[in-house]
View 1 (cartoon, rainbow, N blue to C red):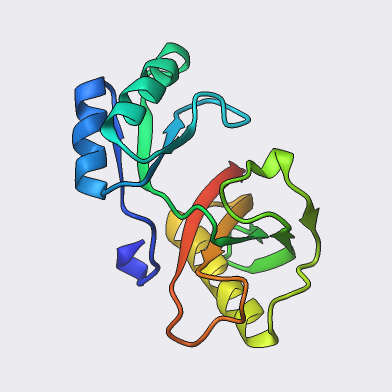
View 2: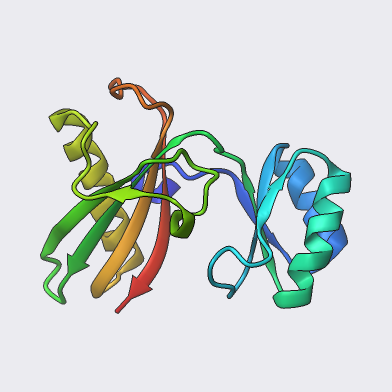
Length: 171
């Protein structure tokens, strides 16, 4: 994402407890642990300490061979864009969605409103541009759900941090 000037939360993957502990130290606590190849948040959760990380990773590695350790953005506002891109690089956003709950509540357990109701026009288009930039950079042809997190529930400022999380590619 850095190649296209889009920010992502600091992250690293791990296949052992020791690698996970080193990754969390590099990323900085608090972190979220995501079990690879698992649906519905299985084996995933938030950790504030290495002890919590090791306990959660034992469960994660029981269901997946790999984990992703990411800087926690718990509490941030989560917006999603459904983007479709064709072979000629034409992109459309089918809709955008706004999670009622802040990041930290699994999307499957949260109320999602479509289209979003609290974004200003400027913020809507800025985050839409981010979603399109990500799908183009990844080279996805077909439909993709891109999650974008913003720093607060307040309208974004031009310099407000936001992060993109490519997810749910369905070519």
